[in-house]
Length: 354
Image (cartoon, rainbow, N blue to C red; front, side, top):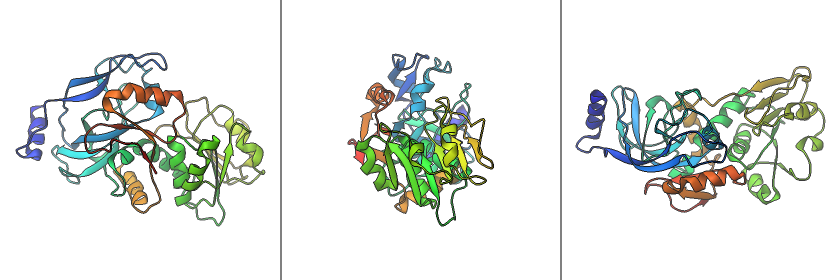
C-alpha cells in the first residue's frame, strides 16, 4: 500500500488527492426495488492506484439496470462502492502506466471480474480506480455526463453486433433490435447504422418513435399494438439483436431470419434463450457478459462519436446524493436512454437530450 501511495504522489507532483471522498456504498443485499441499503457517505477512503492502474477523478456516471439488479446479490455488505460507468479526468497513475497521464479526460466501464464476488465497480464516487488497459480517452464531441452514459451499453452493443457479423458489407442488410428506447437500444440503432445496416427495425412506445428514427431506425413499431414478428416477411432478416432478452423471442423471430445466413443474439437476464428448433443454418448466440477490459473498443466508439455517428441520450440526471431517486426512476422501467449521475463540477448539472 505504501508503494502504491508513493506512485500516486509522484504522479501528482506536489498535489495529493484527499484522504476521503463522497461515495455510494451498498451495505447489504435487498429485495428487488429495495434501496434501503444504498448509502451516500462522505468519509469513504480514496483508493490509491497500484501498478498498471489509474486513479480517475469522476465527473459523472449513469444508471444501468444491472446496477440495481445486482443489489440483490450477496456480494454487498463489505462497504463496496457501486457503479459501472465512469467519465472524468486522470488524477494519478500507478507505476507501469505508459499510455495515460494526469489530466487526461477519460471514460471507462468498471465492470471487470464476475458477479461471484470479484466484480470491480466503484464509479459512483468522487474517485475511482481502473486498470489503464480498460480506460479510453473520452470523445471530444461528448461532455462528461454524455460520455458517462455510454461505456457499458455501448461496449455491450459493439461486442454483440460484431459477434453477429458487423460491420456488414452486403448491399441490403436488415437488423432487428427488439427494444429501441432503453440504454442498449438507442446505442444499438446507431451502431447498426454505422456498421452498414440498411433497414433497422425496432419497437418502442409512440412517444419515442421520432427520437429512434432520428438515431437511424427505419421501422419503429408500437409494441402495444403487436409484435415485430407479425410485421416481417419470412426470410427477410439478417440479424436479430434481442437486447430485451425475453423468453420465447428466439422462437418468435425464427421465421423472419434468413436460412443459412441469419444470426440471433440475445442478452440474458429476462428468461431469454436460444430456440430449440432453429431454422437450418441460423446461428444462435448467448451474448453473456460485457468484456470491458480492452480500451481499443472504447477508442473505436470514441471515433464514432467524434465522427457524428454516436450520440448520447440522457434526458434525466441526478446529483450523487440523490442516487436513490435515480435508482427508483430506472427500476420503474420508463426511462428513455440513460439516467445520468453528476458527481463533480466537471459534469453538466442539467439534463442532456440530443
